[in-house]
Length: 265
Image (cartoon, rainbow, N blue to C red; front, side, top):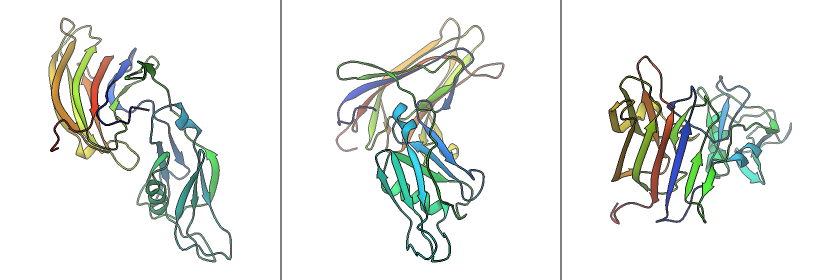
């Protein structure tokens, strides 16, 4: 989705409207789950890249059948189908959800996976099944595109900014303007470590910027050339707060440059 060349600057913008707010949730990425998601043999999936193409992925868990022993769980990708060959003895499947998630993530295919519960539950044969939803496309500006503009439907929240980086990136500028009728409100930008499914690990969230003076007379805030470093499998989460309890709609954007700000970083 986003430019891959080191040194290329680009901008990512989200506009939230209606009763939606900046709550730090992901938007534009296709996600899915295999049956058993609340148990120890469940699997949760995310498309590695944003966009509608993520909705096209299918997952297949293959059992070689009685009388056949498979020494290890492995995965391959054929087109949009991710195929996992399940470990088994000659009597039964022995592959766990942990193994399946690891196999998918090891080949770095179009899907990212994590297990639910302990992950020690044995999985069953599955699919191929189309189970991914929620992938959307941004509006692109520039030739080639350097601006990626996300506009969720009215009343839909957003706020997670993941730039699909496989290397260190630098945040060069942050801008925000919110819809405020009254009161004093705040916005917080946190750096997030992401789990195997590319979702934030709440316990490891740390703010890198906070501003608590947003009002109807001063609904915007910006800073530039601060050089916030965001590593592989990290994202920025934007969360607003208001009184009474709620979140703010509006517009948030980041200017990003792939590659560290300084050569020694």
